[in-house]
Image 1: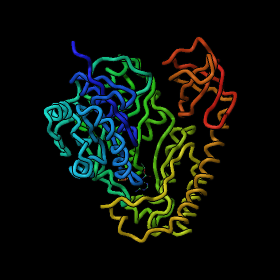
Image 2: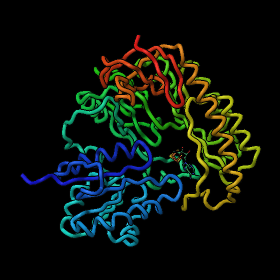
Image 3: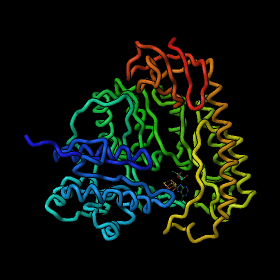
Image 4: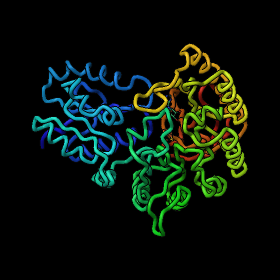
Length: 439
Ligand code: 5AD
Ligand code: SF4
């Protein structure tokens, strides 16, 4: 038998890219590739790129430039660009960086095996179509390898919301949901391979409306189906849009035992004027009322969110409205970003905020968020949580896992194994994690 070829994948950006990289690795596994942790001994290098913020394309070009030496040493090395920069830039990538052999958009990963063969024949391979077929079905020839206790599972992809700052509707395309039976089959398969917690992924996951046995299913319907899967202990989902937070989903947070008390629900801004300019079609008030209803269903839920500061035309009073909203919600986690211009999106054409003012606002917002995050984490001390253990900690005999609320928890105990789910009493709150002892 010939030596397996080696594949190095570098993943940027969101959790969906992590999931996609796994699928690409499995697809190329069928072509005789095994993954390697370094580009130095690779026969193929794939960059799975992100286009959401900053000078994404420039970063990819500079990363690609670094592979020049490797390609000289090993002319058979194939270099590919996948993900949202591949979708956005297309052929331009090969024009600007001729050492690239393959460019594949997020909707075309199932065509990777043919594309790889084409590069082996000395040709360039480009595919940035939005085909009709379910790429995940075509990617199914996966080896049944054992897996860690947590996994991502993509249920929905793309977005029709067209927020004025965002590239996702252009790079990931229109909103599409996978049929429920395929997702449930994949969940069973993951559980057989050792997975105990599944995070359902979608750019607009709560808009899920995949075909079920009795017509379209909602995300809550899908979660209830997954709740029946034996051996699966925990369900999470991300990322949600406030406008798609349906009644059945809110209710599930109070009644579905495997659904974890954590919700990522980005609001982006607390100013109605800015929300309107962002094309968000919700107000600060409607968002706050929504959170009230979610907390009525599940009082201990930990909220998480995303914020953009320095969106075009944002004035100090708009920013203050964001601070007020944060003060009212008190997020357990929140991700805040300085607005970055994405060419081709409506907001790119508008009057930009002075970068120094935006930096200063970002610092103030992050300080407030950090304070709340800290208070919520400290509030866990003395409480009993259930921890799903994921890996050994830094200290000998220590294991790390996640609580229901997604806090990292360190516990000493040689008897704990990866994949165990145990009750832990929290004793300490550190910089970024909790410590506790087994009950
Ligand atoms: N500038 C800054 N942040 C952005 N996000 C999306 N597009 C931009 C942009 N152009 C943020 C949003 C989104 C998160 C994934 O990234 O907050 O929820
Ligand atoms: Fe982008 Fe999310 Fe808005 Fe869709 S809903 S356009 S993915 S920020």
